[in-house]
Length: 614
Image (cartoon, rainbow, N blue to C red; front, side, top):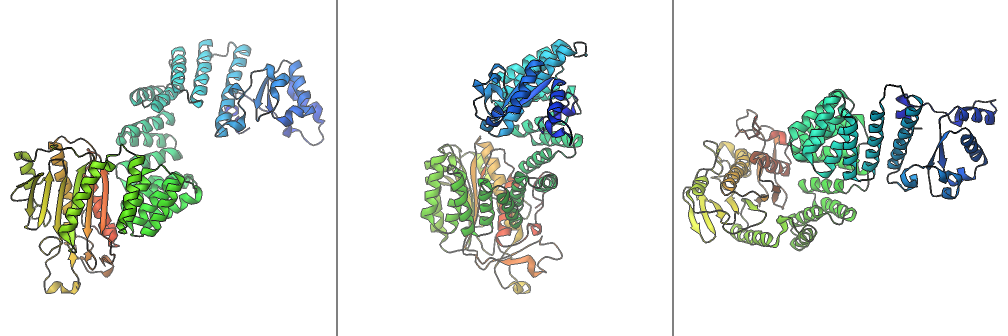
């Protein structure tokens, strides 16, 4: 009855069933009367109905009255040895409803078949109804195409939709569904063309805007995706799925507040929409609101206890808070639910590494490599090289407070960067977009050759290394001359070594802008790893807010001392078209949240160009 609702609301059918028999009616007479007035008998076939004397009696009446009989096979039973075997049955090929996964696919198959039967009857009874025979044929072919889509036969479905369009070039739904079929094949350009045509024929239908928005999102064109989802919402204000996908497009653009607002609306419309809580949790994670993220992941797990990604992402939130035991517990569950998830092993490896359990970390990294051998982050050569650079760094810093940030192409190839070229030297000596008078990395006065590439020193302390294979590293002690504010008698009330907020932002921003410039000059067009590390921070203090703010340092809840023995480590795999300041923002966020400070206190804000206002 529920599945037939749309056909009924379109005025194509009226429905009678024996629950409409009233008290006092002679039920046999009522059934016989209403049955003989019917055009179609939907016979629900099960072992019980085949054994029912009354059902078989009604079936006999339908035979005598030449009523169209449509058997609907509910379950495995002996219907093929019954007189019903003479009829075409639904679902297609007699596959019982109980064998469809989910069963709703089976019911939709049934409904499509009933629509075709209704259209055939209409053509026979109302030949002058205004619907041409060609249009009717087009509709029949269209329904056949929908069957094929349900069965996952994409190419035959495209062919059938094309036939429907040839018969009726104004069939908007055929264009829309063919567009969906093209999209499923990854043929996004043809999909968009079909959605465009569907919109021309039915400009007030939200469905093709929504479908086109999904394709734009798959293409990475998030602005057009957002425009289409917004149009779908304008036409259908309670379109929860459109809000959800628009939120995901905003999330992909790192516009986390807009994404969160859309997910909030989805949850208002559909309080049990688990994916909306999950994606809002991702947005909160990106904003550094880890407690809110954890709350959302808790709700996801309550709704879907087997949602592996929710455990994984909750683990990431716990890791960001330094709660590595809870994080590892969640990664364990994620891996149990999805044993082939390389990312979960990698995340757990990072948590083990943060706890100083190197052997367990290496084991997980190796498992991730085995599961995703094409992931260049885990290629043996790259991993081995990064480990050797790690050892060189560890030997250099001993127990000093130290800062390090590096970038490395996913696949390290010798002579990728011609380090002796003047253009590369000039970039190292004059990094692009450096703040005037900056305390951070402002370039190296003199470039020195080393066996694998070049190096130099900034402020006489920080070392910059660029190797021929594209590895770029900046390392610098957390000294009075660079990272720390110059302590004066007036400032002794801090009673601690403290990091200067400007420099916390300027080092990653300038470094990543330099990476972008060098990789562009060297034509490096592959993904790469960026990693930032703060070592031996125990006892250091970080003050929130912009140093020029009149309230700078005034309130105790806006400054924190780092009490953890673990380093702060931020790591991202980055696409070649990355925005340096966007990645840097995530790294700065990790530092502030590592100190337990709100990201609202960060001294750097984005301007219209999504750059730090340093």
